[in-house]
Length: 162
Image (tube, rainbow, N blue to C red; front, side, top):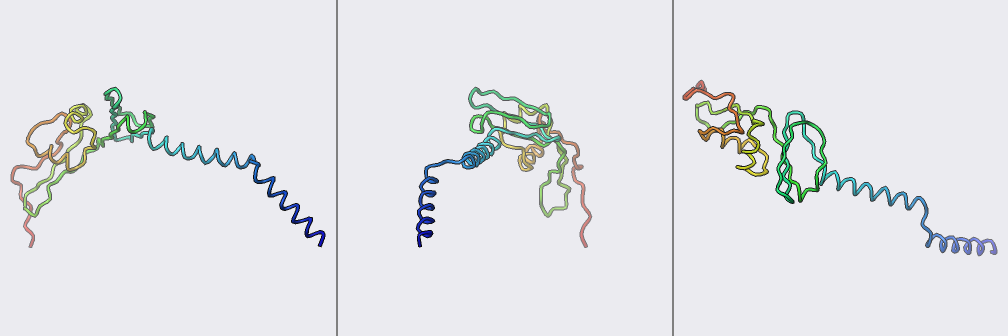
C-alpha cells in the first residue's frame, strides 16, 4: 500500500515538473516546423523557374520595371504580389480551328523572342495559350511576337470520307 502511494506521489511530482519545462526536443521540433512552413511560403512566393525551351518575363508592380530572361534556371524575385511572372513556351505549336469543314485549317506557329515586349504591351502578363495565338495567327496581320512557320494553301481540300 505504501509503495502505491509513493508511486502516485512520484508521478504527480513528475507531471508538475514536466508542465513547466520546455525540452530541447520541443524547441528543435518547433524550429523545424517553422522553417518548413517559411520555406514553403518562400518557394511559392519568391522562386521562379524557366525551362530550357521557355522565356521568362517579370513585372515589378512597385517600380513598373519589366525585365526578360531566356536563360534556363531558378530565379529568386520579390514576393508574388509585387512581382508578376510569365513564362512563354518557344517551341512550335500547331494551331487549328476545329470544324467539320473539309478545308485544312491549321497553322504551325512559334512565339518569337524579339517580340516579347510587344506581346506584353498587347496582352499583359497572361501566358500565350493556344487560343490567344490562334487569334493572332488568323488575324491576317503580322506581329513581332508570332512567327507562322507553316500555312496551308488557300483552298486545299481533304479527301472525302466514304
